[in-house]
Length: 212
Image (cartoon, rainbow, N blue to C red; front, side, top):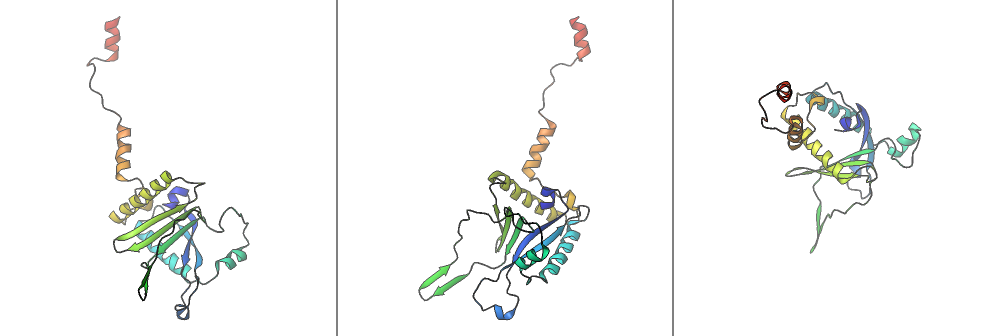
């Protein structure tokens, strides 16, 4: 999806990791989350299945360096900095596999409550939450770059892309559908144009000859 939108076969996205890979950190209270840059390479000629396998291997390799502090990585790379943009990547991918935590303290019952977000740290954030009914997708975006209508269409394209890939995993990535079924049908109607009944059975030269 991002390769099609950015028209680039190679780009970097970021993803947060828990930072609790050491057993002794599991009972500790605190914020250990680290950011991990992922280099994505998309070859449109490869099948979705092959591309998925390559992406899994790439992510597994990157996770072996998950404990390397992101701030130190940015400093080590000595890249030109732009304070109006996040370093290394503009798109963040968040995958939440843990269910909402609930806690009871005697007669007091605690549960998580989602808070509205009024600012976006990145140009675009995909947050996916695993639920018993499937994956729940939330998009957070910079309103200076995108509007709600554009993001709604992006979400629809994401769903259409997944449906196309699941229907035929051996299909080339570049051939996967991005347009929802309703949008494809509308485009086909525009291409066909309106249908008109037959006005006259005679040709234009015949009509000119008769008029003369």
